[in-house]
Length: 293
Image 1 (spheres, rainbow, N blue to C red):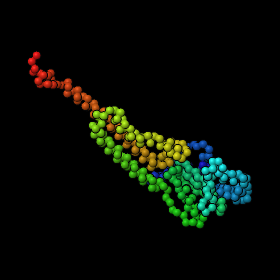
Image 2 (tube, one colour):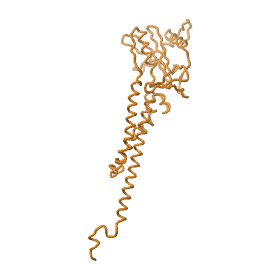
Image 3 (cartoon, rainbow, N blue to C red):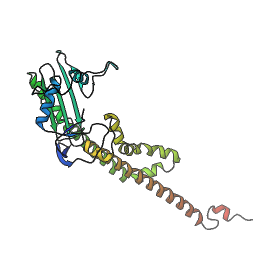
Image 4 (cartoon, rainbow, N blue to C red):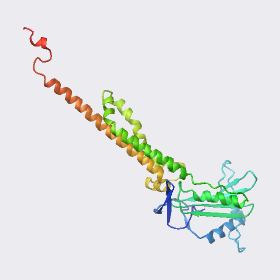
C-alpha cells in the first residue's frame, strides 16, 4: 500500500492558524513513498477494493482472496487492527470500516472503505504531517454523511495547540531575558558556593537545549519515522519555534551567568590581593608596629 496519495510537489504547512506554501523537500523513506494520481483513478481503485478486486467495468484485476487478505488483520498478535496496509475497525452498531492514511511533510490523505454500504471515500489535502490533519477531519465528516448522520465540525488540533505553544514561546523568551538581566545578582549569591553546587544549579537550564537537539528523534519515535530537525519544521512549525526559543533562552542564561560568575570571582580575588599588597609596613596592627624590641 502506498504511503500517501499525492497531488503535486508543493503543499502547505500550518502554524498559528495560518497555512504557508512550501515546496516538498527531497525526502526518501523505505517502502512506498507516494504516487501521483487523479480523482478518477482513486475512484476506480476504491471500487475494486470494495468489489472483491472487480473494477467498475467488470474486469477482475486480482483474486478476491488477495483483497480479503489485505483487509484482514493477522491472528497474531491478536490486539492489532492493522492488516496489509489497511486498518479495520468495527463500530458499536456492528458496521465495519477499513481505512488507510498517509502523511508527507506537505501532504496527507485518507482512504476509507465502508464494506456494508460499498462506499469508498478518498480525501487528499495539501497540508502535511502533524499540524495538518485536514484529511482525517474531512474523512470523519464524510463517513458520517455516508451513514446518514450529521457530521461534527472539528478543527485540526493545531488550531488550538499552536496558540498554547505561542504562549510558551513568549514565556520562555521573557524568562530568558529576565535570567540574563539578573545574572550579576545570581553570581553574587552563588560565588561562595562550591563549583559542583553551581554546576548543579545550572544543569536544569540545559534541559531546553537538550529538547531542541533531540526534538526530531522524539517525534520520530512517537510517529515511527526518522527525520531531521529541518524536516520537523514542516511537521509542526510552532513546536519547533517554541523549542528553539527555549533552547536559545537557556543558552543565553547559562552564558550570562557563567560570565558574570567568572568576572565576580576574578574581581573578588584581585580585590583581596590588592588590599593585602598595598598595606604599608606595620599597618596591619598599630600596637605591633610600636612595640619595643
